[in-house]
Length: 279
Image (tube, rainbow, N blue to C red; front, top):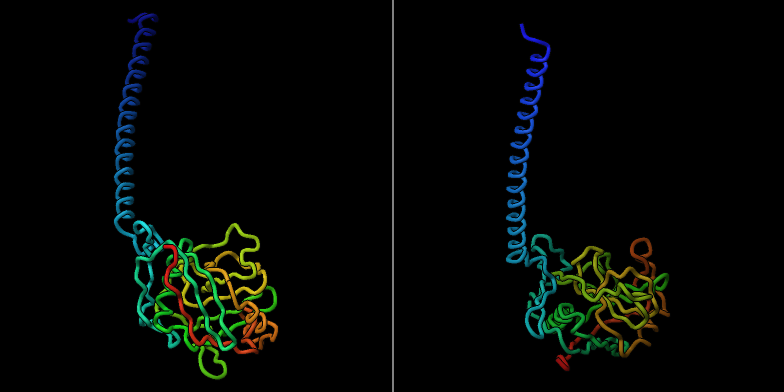
């Protein structure tokens, strides 16, 4: 028959063995966890490296304006799918992807009311300037009408729809453009107002990367959201734009985007872009 002291010693040994077993089990679990975490970290690094590689080597379609070597930018002109084109789309091909990002150009808009000129800085809008140069060389804007005038809230005259031609107005006026889109450039996010009098800027659909051929001349400070490419600055002919504005609009777009067709018709006989100066 065992004594009380012997039973206590046996119980103590049993507790010690259990504790040692539990500690060993916990140690094994820690080592397993560390191994799993280590393997997971390696996997994350591999995946991250793969993503970086894919981004670096691919995804060029998403890069709208990147450096393309000294004095040039690589521009992405995204073609509108042929099956999705309306009759108002005018296909004159795509501009060259590599565009000069130095120097300035003069845009001359020869209208039925007289010439309007603007200075365009290639360092700020290489892709948009390249697009305008391409379109102008194809006669894209010739014999088109400025189809929209806004006199309340904002003060802009909008032009550049290749389908806005001939006598009278159509419901489709303002829906035309080239067979491609490009990303916005030179957004005036730090300017107040973003679009002061004398600016010429690009219209878009409200979605990023939807800039086409339509542009607007700002004849009075306008508090628009800074989502539209500032193409350049008017250097001559603002008095002509203000004459058109003074005559008012017909309210055709009042329930939509605002404004209407100008009551005093202004037709672009020819739009031309000069050679690059100082590039």
